[in-house]
Image (cartoon, rainbow, N blue to C red; front, side, top):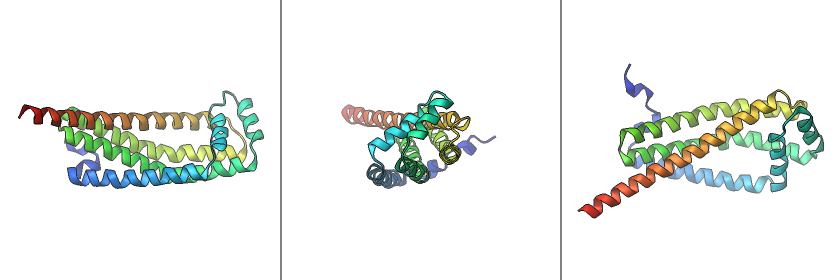
Amino acid sequence: MDARVLDHPFEKLTRHQLAWATALVGAAWALLTAVLVHAISTHEIAQIQRLLEASSPVVASSVLSEWPASVFSSFAFLLGFDLLYDVVHNNATALFAIWGARRLGHPVAALAGRGIAWVLWLDTALNLFENLAFLHVIRALEPWPLLPWAAGIFSFRSATLGAGIVVGVVLHGLAFWQRSARRQSR
């Protein structure tokens, strides 16, 4: 089997295209983040977080019973908005990691960037299932058994997004350090 079959589609972009794509998708991420911060209050986010941290069906049901209509509306908005938001931030992070790997120019870096990009695309697919599960929870007010499953996917996706950002920063940092070392040796 040809190893190139496992390449991520973003790896076909040139370094210049990767830089521009990362900047544009990163700017879209920043814009969507500003919309999100403006659309949902920190109090409502805290209420939603309480649901994610519910340790039992009784606790989850109690949290849901305390929610005013505004929190249900905000959570429903968040679930829809998250479909777009997730695609944007996952692609921005994948582009950033692959661009860093390309700048570094090492096979291990390429493998790291490729792996993160594929996991982030998997996360985008998982987000659909997560949001459908959360939608069922808030529509049916039946937090179990879907709530732990949805919260688990959310935790996994959050961890891999964070890992992707760290990998991208490390790859770009190493590329910068490598470039600086070359300049100093001249």
